[in-house]
Image (tube, rainbow, N blue to C red; front, top):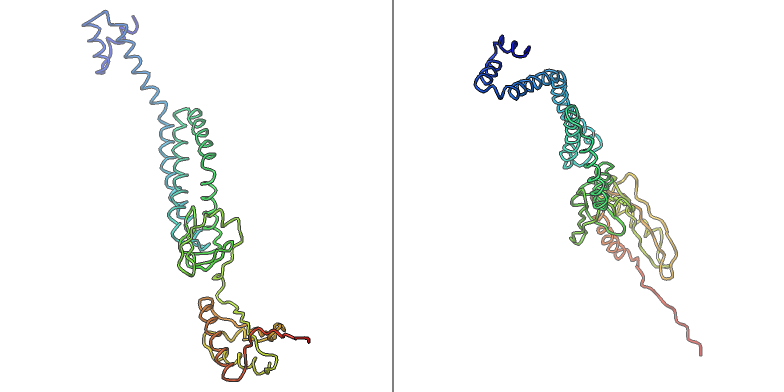
Length: 300
């Protein structure tokens, strides 16, 4: 009866509609009152959730702003480490996407119980991780190469007996082009688990050249001929200065070693140039480069 009298005094449209429905069909009074009460309950629950909704909206907006800012910080950190610029956007997207996913899951947990959902996601992730273990290893190795920066695109490297110029650094593998223009694709896990020789890491390199002269030739003269060529060539650095030493006494020749320095990009030009010019200079100065000799003694 109390509910009925409250309805008689109602001024809102909803309450008037309820009264109208009851008047038209008194047999539905119970269900109509129940529906009206449920609507009021939903409204009350919504009002109770308003503070939570405000916090969720604020956290959502702030979280996405933090994700964008974190992406910019990651790019700056990679620039300081001189990481290849081609990976900036990829790593930035991973960072921002991870933060945004965390924000979305946190906001959703304010309204729903996500424990079952997270357990299912965890199980699926574990199964996928076991199935893609090799791929994950390659990907992790790719990140290690890009962050630690043992070499960059264009460097001449040697990995486990394979040498060539680095053409492309990918997340799963690295492409190397050999001196005879062969394209070799090496898995990144294979690179990080082996020794890496980077011939382009320093701006200058030592060129070791061996020349054999006859035992009857003048050693001092041969050394001076080599030094004269070295000091006259622009490709050869004068600091450190070129040096020539007697390296060993072989069966058929005295081995001289010339130690000269050049810029890294001029290594092979310097090597081949010296090989040719020293041979021509030896010929002009009567210095012989002997063949292997074998003395045969015949006993009667």
